[in-house]
Length: 345
Ligand code: PAP
Image (cartoon, rainbow, N blue to C red; front, side, top):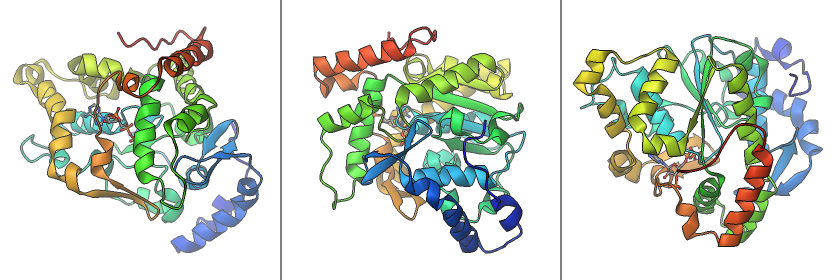
């Protein structure tokens, strides 16, 4: 599917060396698209823009355009896809630890001194500021682990049509997603903008005006693709990971082509991964309590903000019964007939 208007950028600029030239030219090419889009109220920026039914921050959409223009997936790439605040940080840690378990010992593991977002970079938060060739020359071991919040329908064909690249997707009860997102973005919202109340955030979320939203369309896009391509997309639920993390880790290993041997299971390797990546462990590490993650020049996040409570059902402490009911109704309506359920039990 052609998600973005064709542009001559790849042919014209691929030979140029200077990253800022590349950025400027891509900006010029896409400026018209960006200027003419519908806008809605932003959570962290003044507004979000709507493109092909989905909402993005203006820079978020530019990043997606960059992905289309410059990203060359490798057949061995592993992508983690998610709607924001559905468990990305946790799943990054679990996948990184699973795939690289023969490279790193548990006593001096990279996840003990690096936030999971460092070990497993975001595609969408880097490209528009950098010479994209950094992805091809970063020396990262195979398989590359890369993540995206982009909706499935707007990913470049090179990522979706390549049968060998694998995706792991995580979803979560939207009531908890909304509350998690509101807490998180409230901390990142610039002081120049008036605060965003939970009631306002709720209305925006229900109307789908949320980064990479509507939430339900995002989930359904990956859900349908996972039904069509079960060997390419593993569909996971945050609540299931909380309930049975050992089962989830074994499934992840099997799906990605790194199955756990009986010997590894006997030696407790799965347990060690689950323990290493647990909320209690990750959130107590020095790096996740005191350091800052630099996604781009305009997005700096205290690592501790990625670890709030990490529990199921916290939304009931913030949303009224009426709000919960309305969100549940939207969810049942949107997902009816899809075969996807959101029960937490
Ligand atoms: P992102 O989109 O900004 O990367 P993401 O990691 O998807 O955020 O979601 C953050 C949520 O996952 C937080 O949920 P909460 O606000 O309801 O608490 C965060 O606490 C939770 N989380 C982070 N790490 C873990 C973990 N190891 N286990 C369980 N939940 C976790």
